[in-house]
Amino acid sequence: MRIIDLRSDTVTKPTEAMREAMARAEVGDDVYGEDPTVNRLQEMVAGLLGKKAALFVPSGTMANQLAIRSHAQPGQEVIAETKAHIVRYEQGAAGALAGVQLHWVAGDRGIMQPEQVEAAIRPKDPHSIQTALICLENTHNAGGGTIYPLSTIERIRAVASAHGVPMHLDGARLFNAVAATTLPPAAYAQHFETVSVCLSKGLGAPAGSLLLTNDPAMMDRARRFRRMYGGAMRQAGILAAAGIYALEHHVGRLKDDHENAKRLARKLQQIPAISINPQHVDTNIVIFDVVGNRLSASAIVAALKQEGVLINAIGVTSFRAVTHLDVSTKQIDVAVEAFARVLR
Ligand code: TLP
Image (cartoon, rainbow, N blue to C red):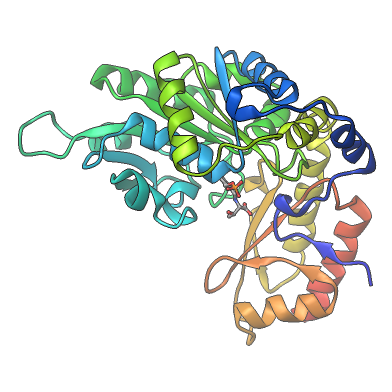
């Protein structure tokens, strides 16, 4: 049985052509700044996002955490949406490693409004904790792959600038937003002092993320914290080559994943036990609920696994399915048949 793995777009495996690019990569010691392939990737991504500099790091979590550590002082506060990856899935690193407190703001499918952000910024009085950073996530993972409207970002930026607070974008899936809107990545990135992007989600590279900024002092701090956090690698060009290959070959095809996600959502809606609004599927993430079924979420996940379909439960009745380059349209249809059998 061929497994249809919809748990995440992180499960993709490097293609033969990507592996060849990795095998051929010219390498050097990146701690000395001497890996030509890492340098090429950094320049390429900086150019795409319209930033002066990029830093290659092992993971999206590290890119976000370097941003938080480099922007904020211990004892300060960072604003993030309640379901943000930084809040939910980074093992409390902002508190544990940067010594900051996260201030959650509940968005609508992950999207915060400027008025909410403004209300969360602390007054500059001597009693109050100080706001060091505002973090946005685009697309928003737990919100359901939601695209941040550019106009909302612009209005949040205006609030941030009025209060002198910098902004960080968790752009792990920024290229999904780019593929869906056809806006250039720089149109989003220009509003943020720092941006992280991942190569190992829908782009299909085995590992690697980048942190971007225009500010040389910020880049210097991030580079030092990368070393402190154990993320300074040596002949990392092997990984960077996969990233370059992914950016050259896998950005355009992200819209296929979005089509597959919409198809999955429309078909799941036909199953009586499933509650889903296909209109809420902006990109490659499909979040839905199973209502009134005798099976628990973990029992449903286990039953689907028996049928060769892997998904994640993300709540008592909620599930997440993610489309990616290792799942075909045909497999979406096969997966829906498995859902129908399990939830009959
Ligand atoms: N997300 C993973 C899990 O950690 C939940 C997934 O399967 O979606 N920002 C966002 C928005 C993310 O979705 C992720 C990974 C990260 C950051 C972290 O990237 P990595 O896994 O490279 O540390």
